Amino acid sequence: MKLIMENFRKAMREFKEREGKTMSYDSSLGGFVVSKEDLSKINKAIEKIYKEFEKRTGGTAEDIPKIEVEDLEPVARALNESAEQDQKWSEMEDDFTEEEKTNLFLRFGANSWEELSDANKELILKRFDIFTPAGQLKQKIGAVRDVEKGLGRLTPEDYEKGEYVLPVSGEVLEDFNKMVEELKEGGEVDSLFEKARDWYHKIRELLDQETGNDQDATLLGLLIATYSPRAKFALNLAEAAFMFKAVQMDAKENKELLEDYINNFPGGKKKEQGEFRGFTNAHKVPNFTLNLIAPDLAGGRDEEGKISYNELYMWNSTIDTWMIDAFYPNVRGVTTAKEWETIKGKMMGNVVTYRYMAGLVAQEAKKLGLLPHELQAIVWVASQIRKTGEKGLGVTTEFAVNQIKDSIVNLEKIKQQFKEEERVNKKLVSSYLKDLDMGKEYSEQFGDESWLKVILDKIDKEGFAEASGYVLGMKDEKGTTVVPGVRSITASGKKGKEPDRFPAPYVPPKPKAEKGAKKKAKKEKQKVEKPLEEYQNSDKYGELKTFQVMNDVIQMPTGKFNNLHDSILLYLSDDFSKEKAVDYILGRFDPEATASKDYFIKESKKRFVIRILKS
Image (tube, rainbow, N blue to C red; front, top):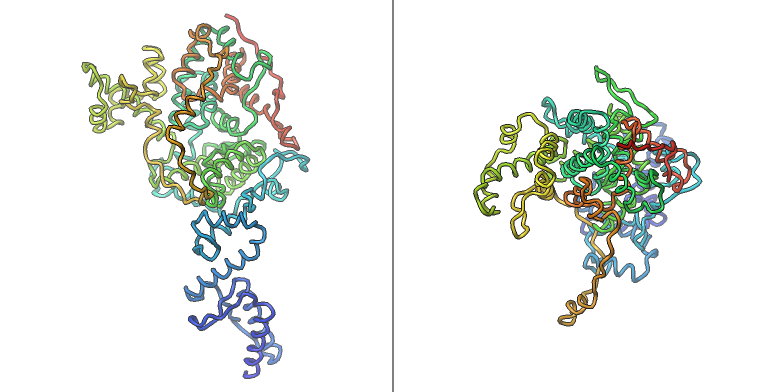
């Protein structure tokens, strides 16, 4: 045994000289500080010695000891991790110019690597696993070409192997399972899990219930998708309801003028009348549309709850910014707020990244016994609950509907309470509204009527201007909102805590500008008023309800013209139906395309001919 121990000491000395390059003796600890890599080599050396013991003695070495990082003293562990950080930095710092290093350290208020805290060192190392020193993602988010098979036929594994996407970590996919369990907690009937899972199914039920026929229900679904970008869901629903009613009325009363109006939308100058131009270039709105109008596209459940999947459409889930946050927390945590918004924008518009994430949703949904759009809705709701810290703030359909009902009660109760007042005072209004039980008030006034029926009835009886208060609220003579509508309600409330971000680049303080320089520059920069576009001509189109709603109710009339154009164009055709809308959406992209540029189709593959019924 003495000989074995002497050989062990000799082996460790040789190991230190030959392989343990980062090992250092710390007198305060009475031992060596090593990296994780060195620790692995030490364990291999120990195993080798025990094997040698077996060989020489003919015995059996049971329970060969192995040193784990967790077994070390906390101080030793910290020093070990610090040494490992320093080693990693020494291996990568030559990739940085001196200017890049200086600017990097200044982000953290330091002048050198040594001045950084261990936490900031770790943050920097994590960032540069993903980014180049110049701040570019190592894995480009961009177009691809000459892929081995159609972009719509690639599996998530294919996308990763081809290095077309930024890979999603296994921990993230495991976390989706945790989100499902989080929503199931409590075990109550009609739990938050069911509300999130059935999100799209409930919306479709509402559309069918309140519109009365397949064509109108499908139109409303198209409009909800059209007005979904950059809108809170309750506001999205309310705005779509107003546009739906306007289009429905114009289609009956002023069809030819409505057709002329939509053909003059921006982007239509180079298009022929009746030619499609929307639901393309990005996947989110087309997918959201299909989830809303045909939530059974990727499969369904029988009466016993057994799922049947339609493999052809398993890609059909809605990937929005909440989903990208859920997929890439590792990237989000090492970017500035501005960088992350840019990256998310690129991912949203990138067909390769979108199909990859949708493929992952489908893959994980099957493991969990869910349909793709059901898992997506669960992750969407759970992510919002995690951010706000309150279960009641997960935006289920019930949550959004309650916000709309609140806006309806707000307006009706204030009109009743203050009808004899000459001025509606914001302080008085706030004091009165805060004591109301909104659910009870709504039920007493409208019974079991849905919010959608209340809005549509209000428009029928009192007109769009009066009903618009449900969305816009009520203002005083100074333009201050005194009664909150859906827009104000969705913009307020608990937002949740934003994660810690990577510090923004250091910007040296600017010298103070000369007094009055800003005013002078403002005067010199004269605004040039642009001439009105044809579609903005109120003399020509002012009688259209669609024109009125677009200009007086919708918060963002621009940027959604192509999708609105196609939604109305489909609705005006003589054979419009849910099936035709689904075929139209599916005809906007080609799953067999092997290059990004060929994926979205400028003209529908099915070449629909839209015939407008003349009255």
